[in-house]
Image (tube, rainbow, N blue to C red):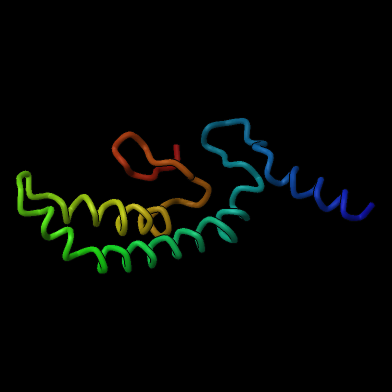
Length: 104
């Protein structure tokens, strides 16, 4: 019986209860701090290692025009997870059209 009440409480914390667009869901900051930020840090570290390991192959891809293979690889593997982890306001999960995380 206690397990059901704990599961119910967790589900209610996850439910988006915000009414306005400037408010965030009640359970979202908790999961943002406990789950999403650490996963973003892991993705940033893993992406940096993959970027370093594949740099010689990226150098070969950078030979032909438009010569932007390093920028694309760094953006996908390092910059995007780092922005998600460190540059994002609490509770904002998705970037705007220009790629920046803002609270509306």
